[in-house]
Length: 321
Image 1 (cartoon, helix red, strand yellow):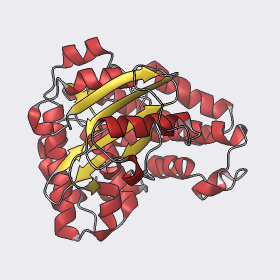
Image 2: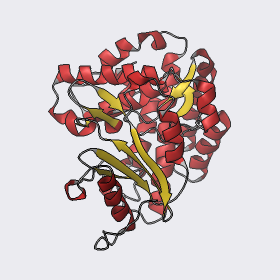
Image 3: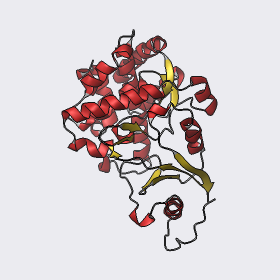
């Protein structure tokens, strides 16, 4: 267990731990930076190492480290340097890959480079999909918070949003029909290990390689699930959008029966999860204005607007299918 001695001037225990871990693995803590895009855990970027810390012990990092050992080498996952629990926090350290977060780099990339990044990322996710599914299940990679892939769970969430007046009955029924089509179509696609939160925000880009990172929500899931998240995030980043190149690369999956129903359905699931989170955040007194929304006006809430767009086939996915 790393000692916090030597960083008594740092009042925050997670920060003190991060500095100790970085120093242990050859990085100068004074040169460490904090990425703005991290939300599931706290991240410190050192010169040679990356420290990730959770302020409660859930075992997510231990599972990710075990999973990392199973991933095919062509995924490019960084070498794991350390793992542990200290002072009620769990942490892991990986070697820092060359490059920068792809979401940060994205606005500076022209159309051809965006295509290169998107297609390399998908090729590496296809390698993730070759991971042994039975072994991944044994590790506990059986669900993801973002997509309620159990039909009972999905319908319970949809009904909860109706009961809590986050959606109206007409929208509820429209989304229910979309879930019907989704769950009828899921058996038509292979089951694989999916990242479930893939996209520029969880990718390191060095100008040639787009390496997916942060596998703590990886789960056994339909093989085309990762497409929805990547396409969503690229659409949100604006033009030029390399979606057409990505869809061409994934043409084999998209040729399977029910592909459109699955992608629409995954998008609905993601936004059902998002709307529930926004509602709970608002009820707890959270500031929705920092997300560009008004607390008492659902029409300004992004997940609410997306769900209406999915139901009318006018959302970001409409231009792709």
